[in-house]
Length: 197
Figure (cartoon, helix red, strand yellow):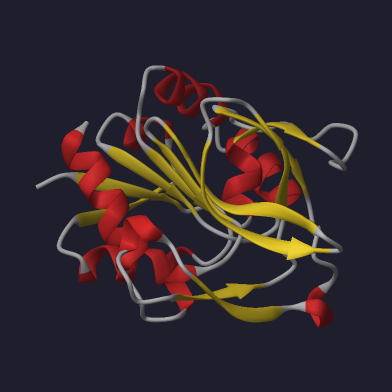
């Protein structure tokens, strides 16, 4: 049984741990560098990407996580997790760093502030015929993406379709929060990616 770590420095860690347990994988909270060596996959939860970045560096996790991702560790990022896995941020703070891996330019809070949070149904072929209820909370979107990035779902704004669910090799990311809906298909899909790796 694979062990999937949930980056436990900030954000909706408990919800991801519960969703992973529900799909039958062992899930542990990752807060220390030595815990990175114990995992077969990593989930980076939603939260506040600037705070998460500072805490990842303060906990000594930045280098071990970057190295593990570069070596092919499967990872899934939701909301702020998508930002943490992006190679480039459109409007990050001056000192903001990411763990990188995805050949994307991501825009923080692209859909607006907390009051602009919304839900919508998305059709995601990889997850079957039933639509996915997507909850967007101060969510990012993908502004630019490279040829290796597979767009699984997009949301239209002002005539432009912005990717909100993407995959690139062993990396998966969503702008929205599947961990809060009780629909565990994304976690199941990611667990299958980890098993395949």
